[in-house]
Length: 590
Image (cartoon, rainbow, N blue to C red; front, side, top):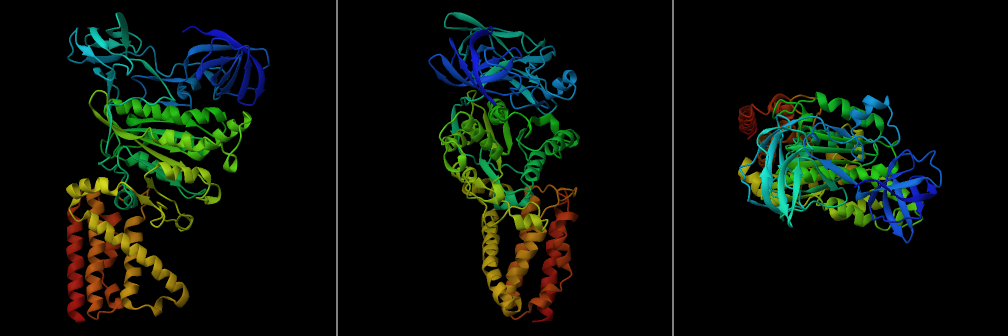
């Protein structure tokens, strides 16, 4: 729709503009403000008056300037060319802006999110004219990268009878590739689609999330697994490793598409992501990680309202690839900055604040965001998922503050970061006492089928040991470790080994930075073998000092560095060596 004047500026309050004389406008309509054409969105409508939040700096705007309506809501462009692109919070391509704006984003700059000139090789589906089509149906494919085949779909709100379908050839995203007769009218279809960012894309039905998202981080996969289509919060104070944990998951998890949203993060951290990701190689394919990644950079010095929109932009892109049958992981770093943007905008609109100044609708917005995750059967009958991994930055590491508490209500997995672990350089600093996962029962059949029927029992046993260690440490603080019997000191010994040899992981070590599920299971089995055999030996009278002298223990502690993922037979040899050492110790001191 062509732009038209819908009103004039009456009042300017930071990113919030009050417009008067408003006619022919609709709620959540995308507008352009002033002669610089600053992007904005109508968020409140009254008779002849509108409240607009703008996504750029309002410096220099004056009352009386015109406001231009677009006739459509704030939307993202969907089509080939998304993968490997870096956008800002409202889907402006930053690399293209850099070419014309000399390091800074000029106000009112308007570049399309997708390249209009590039031709893509389109391969049509085996559909004949006269075939009934409905929203979500795949009508062709484009090879976007060597890893991602972009499935071209009928828009979700279109259904009818296929009139024509283009043959195989090279097309731009705006050229007609199909025509559908709907309601007596013929509607042309192109590879380019648009979708409002605040509207969830439809799916046929929601499925139970039964397959874990494998991250390669042992504390996550083994102790607190996340299912594909699940939601998780990573809360932690400044410096506890939220961003680094998300980076590691984005790099090594087995999601097919990654959408990384830098929402209000520091510029230097986002720069590291933008510089580092193109250089990283996917261990599964040997290709660049950017061939499956979309980056949304909305740093803390960018306009606060664009920060609020960036979350919705990212999850809409994720839903689009979910509808193509892909498993997508969304990294939101951090939702606290997003909530702070809501608080600032709410204050400027003079709304009644709730706890700690946040708007009363904060829980609703948090719920709406996390509810867009899920394991879905798509409209085309495919299986796709969106997993949301949201970092939370509570001030002072206080998990009782509103954003953390409301987030815990709507996620099923919680990876709480611990300040003491971070200070001790224990990475990932995920606390095994405060964290939990409600996906355990859902993913247990997958684990038992993949790595062995003892997975759930082994995990339960080691978690029980960690809980017993906490109680024993409280006694140790009062009376010292020497007052404990060997049977209890052995629990402390095994837990220390488990934390150092299993839970702690070196992100800079080529072998240790990623562990596949088979390696994780074998490492856990070796540590539990030491626990079970050692416990029985101590019951029969062997002292802990003699048990700790075994030379094989040094190899157990170093196994995470010495045994690669593709040489798992070395774990069997290590276990055999450990059991021989235990047999020898028991025979010598029997």
